[in-house]
Length: 239
Image (tube, rainbow, N blue to C red):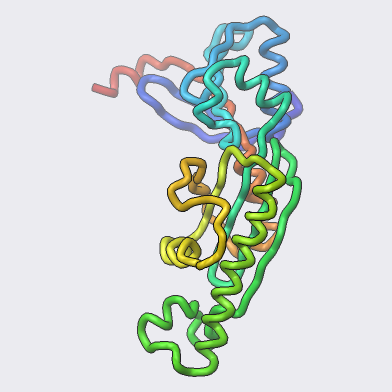
């Protein structure tokens, strides 16, 4: 009670699910209430499964920052909540990047990087423009150098943070073209392109400024609480 949720309806198999989004702290409170109430509780496919006092099944999808292969049991989950691991957030668009390292629901450090990479008259990044018309003009050369500095500064910041924080997950949002150019930069890279810790941010990212970083971070920390009711009509309609 007292939690602000947004309701939506989902149908999965014969179950009619009424889902509710909640914050990281609300999720922790929910887990603690289930443990203290000695209600049946198990971890199944990154989802907490329990039942309320009326006996109805209750499912809570873990926040994305807690969905890791190393969290296999309730004990692992509780240990992670008690002593949360760090993770990085990297959001890039042409000429602008927002970076952060966070732990649990807390952002530990963040950095905004902005460079002149887009032609104002055409709204295209120099990475795209150089593939069509070359790079002999002064403006083009300036933008190309700005693009190099853009990627170098991102790598440098992440490299510094990697010496301080041991990130268990690396959340990334950028276009394939930007990603390719970023990893071709001839500077030390703290995280390889094939690093298994990379995770795609599964949300639409707008202009990656500080407020957008905060919004995406909240979504990564969000859990989904679901109550499941077995409906005979739904189960019979699925054949």
